[in-house]
Image 1 (tube, rainbow, N blue to C red):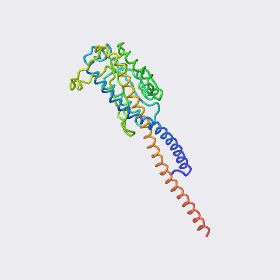
Image 2 (cartoon, rainbow, N blue to C red):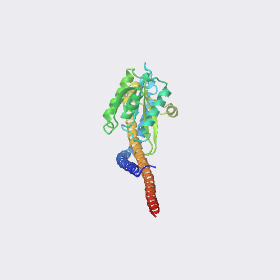
Image 3 (cartoon, rainbow, N blue to C red):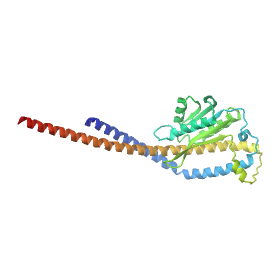
Image 4 (cartoon, helix red, strand yellow):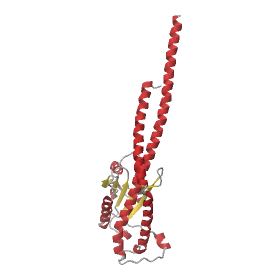
Length: 288
């Protein structure tokens, strides 16, 4: 059995860790509550964006633009990961890493046939460890949530696609369901995915003053930008929800350990007292 001094040291360490976990939980809860107020608006925006996409499908489905047909002279893939900058957020980062591996396996591409843009330093760290080609890395924070960074990423994707540097692009992120649940999602960004089932069930005619080719070329940048913006917002909210839950669970587990070590310490103290009393009685008996 460990000594009382060792047990006191363990209990003190756990109490200090618990203070840190509670502080991190409080910070994550504050950020989570702030972001959650925007989630309803994000859901409505996503629904509206889907309606716009469907309307565009009716016009650009027959477009000859490579953005729609995917006919480019490259098989290279560009993958954008949305992870956290730090750990201690449950399975948030690991699920993205697994999603990346599943996507690479599904596409059947070699390490030299795809590039990675990591929004969040944890994704970049994982890719370096696996020796994947990292095209660009940016931290995920309030500054990244601003439109400028996402516009640059979307413009870079289109530029590489139009120059036949890549043949397709995907995003991997955690879609927010609740603080306890996040769904790892993979979406194809380029070429634009035409919903054939929607087209088959909708005979509505959409007209515009520009040709199908021009409409596809002008609509693509904004569609990509808003796909990235939706993914980033979901990922950032999922990160803080996962961290809040992880820190709460860790704090509860540390409390259980503190109570367990406290009980062991009490038994050790009682054993020491019993041994001392036994030695006193034995000494008294020996003096008779």
